[in-house]
Length: 140
Image 1 (tube, helix red, strand yellow):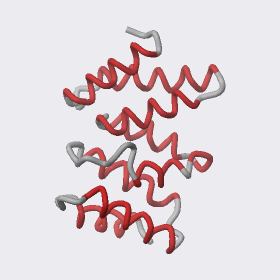
Image 2 (cartoon, one colour; image 1 turned 30 degrees about the horizontal axis):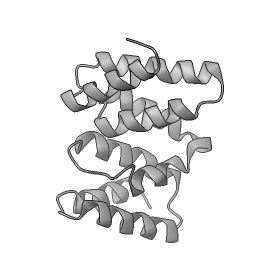
Image 3 (cartoon, one colour; image 1 turned 90 degrees about the horizontal axis):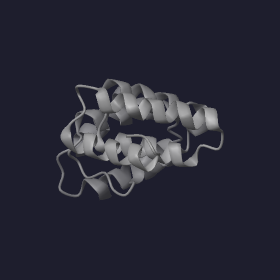
C-alpha cells in the first residue's frame, strides 16, 4: 500500500464521530494486509493536520506506529515534532523519553521536546503538555 493510499484512508475517517473505533478497524485491516513502516509518515502527518481528533489513549494508530521503533519510527516522530508539534505527537515523544534506556538517547529526545516548545506552530494544548513533560524531566 502506498503512503498516498494510507493518507486517503485516514482522511476518509477523519470527520467520523466514531474515529477511534474506525481507526482501530483500519489498523486491523492494515495488519492483515501486511502494511508496514510505509504507514508511519502518513499517520504522523495526519496527526499534524488533525490535531483536534481524539486518537485514543494512546490509540490504535500509536500502537501501530510504535511497532516500527527499530525500523526508524523514532526518527519519523522527531521529524514530525520538528514540523508541527501536536498534543498527541508530544505525548508519543514523551513515551519514547520514558522508555529510553541510554542517557544519550534520552537527552536527544528531551532536546527535541524542548525545541518543540519553541516551535511557532505548536498550538496551546500541545504547548501545555510539552511544558508539563519537560517539567517532569526536570527541565523548565
